Amino acid sequence: MGVIVAGMTAREWTARDAAGVLQVPTATSHKYSRGVVGLRTGSPAYPGAAVLTVEGAARAGAGMVRWLGEPEVARLVLHRRPETVTGEGRTDAWVLGSGVDARSRPDEVRAAMLGALRSGAPTVVDAGALDLAAEARGPIVVTPHDGELREVRIPLGLGVDDLEGEDPLQDRLRRGFDERLLVARETAVALGGVVLLKGAVTIVAAPTGWWTAVRAGTPWLATAGTGDVLAGAIGALAAAAAANGPIDADALGPVAATGAWLHGHAGRLASGVAGGEAGHPVTALDVAAHLPAAYAAALAAS
Image 1: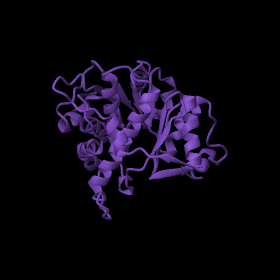
Image 2: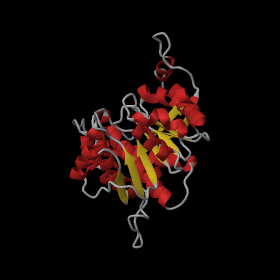
Image 3: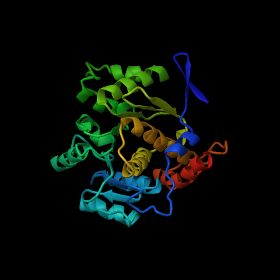
């Protein structure tokens, strides 16, 4: 099925497209060749986000998940996923900001995030790191929902989006798919990176003009923590790509779209709507638990 945009049909990101990005281990594969994803996510106020991003990364096929942060949060991460590494070391891609409040973010957390952004490694930027996205020195994908997009745009000089009680950006985003696409594409150009604008139809736009739409999900995904799982999953795929050679913004677009497809299809499987049923409520951990099955479904479509 296509999405109609200004009189043309844009092909959606499909299971077959996702299969072209996903990697299947061979007899010579090892944890480093499959990619090491590093995460600076969660906080004492929102420790669950650390657990959920780690879970998303692990379930999406990372060779190693490295989580860095406060010891009290690390204990929760290790309780859920004891294979997680909590020390410094090799990192092929980063995930930053999930479960972090930019308004109360400690200086040392901000400095650590800036270090990751300036490292040149592919980076997935979410929630409490979105205001730092302009500092990236390597390929980057930002993953805002509508209410967070201004955090990316304002540092890029795209205007103050809340003036005298009005919100021009939100007004644009409510106008429909065409305008949402335009906003995502102009933000990607200004950022020099990939914008993944979350919604009922997720838009992925790269700075060179490439874009796609992902409609693999379900409204049952509208529950707390699912965005954290998505960020972790995209980080795992970015790490796998980077472990096997340099990756630029053009290549990161399909990686982000594939992460969104896996996440959406996992939500469909978890909620029971994949066969056309009405479905049922899910939690973020339910979605993460179904990422391997979504991975297998994409490969089966290739």
